[in-house]
Amino acid sequence: MRAAVVEQDGATKRLAVREVSRPAPGDGEVLVRVRAAGANRADLSMNVGHFRGAGATLTAPVAGLEFAGEVAELGAGVAGVRIGDRVMAMGQGAFAEYARIDARLLIPVPPEFSWTDAATAPVAFMTMHDAIVTNGRLRAGESVLVQGVTSGVGLAAYQIAKARGARPVIGTSTSDDKLAILRSRGLDVGVNSRTEDVVERVRAATGGRGADLVIDMLGAPVINQNMHAAAVKGRIIDVGRMGGLRGEIDLDLHSLKRISFIGVTFRTRSVEEIQAIIRAMVDDIWPDVAAGRIRLPVDRVFALDAIDDAYAHMRANAHLGKIVITV
Image (cartoon, rainbow, N blue to C red; front, side, top):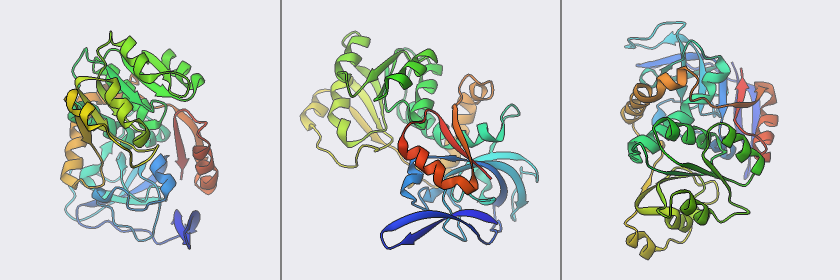
């Protein structure tokens, strides 16, 4: 089968489309004929095995973290899944003609979804439902700040928060143009973090209280800014670290505001934990997703052979919406 394989030359990693062996499903696994795969910022590190808990053992170092397609083969002991089922999943080896995955991690594709639509959904919606609803414990009427709202997961975050009754929902970006588009799509307050004072804008939007819930994709540069922007007894969910992994923290401010600071990742979760996240997400927001009330826009679609162009487009940071690879 054809796949985008990570090749390493010294300290340099690159992707190359190669012929590799087609995997066979093991016990409890299925093989999916991939039709489309979503590109994510985590892909830029080319860290094969990023989601170790996803349970997909690779026969080659194939990149990609989410995919959509038809079930092609069933492993021993798989029940409730049929050949030809339209499915999507978060799992390893997405940039290939075939990917294998634990059957418990499959998500049915809504009838209204194209393959492109389906490829955008697993990572962003699973990540943000777990962050906002499960760990963030969002209640209707609470305020939310999304740091990095124009990222793929950020786009999912503000929509899920709105659907759950949050108000206001505030998002940061360094692009006025992107923020204007999101305000036209329901974001209550957009803040340019390069030219505006994020903390003051959040306080103004919340009547001086601060945000009840902060969803952070940026990490190190905004650790203390998040605490200043948060309400007393606010919750900060550390989802991503696009701006850096390490930074100083004002422990006195953390204590004075009695802030809950929670980190989330899929890298250390078991299959059972991920399965529980899928069930909670589908039970809660899937009617909104299937009806199009929550949906990630697609920025551009690239063929597998143009995977380098897709990565260059992502690195340029000019996109608003998901980048999709068709296989």
